[in-house]
Image 1 (tube, rainbow, N blue to C red):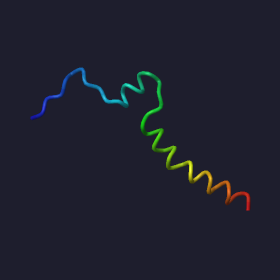
Image 2: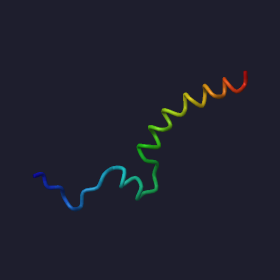
Image 3: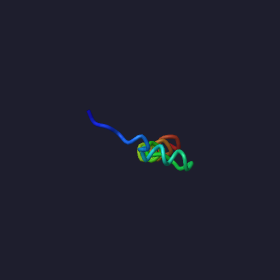
Length: 45
């Protein structure tokens, strides 16, 4: 069985502790940015 250091933390945990945007925020931005552009074009027709 693999042992993990008791002091080990993930980069997401470190980011949350420093009040930084998480990787999830970056991924959602990449997904939503094109969608928002499409919606703007669709809604202004």
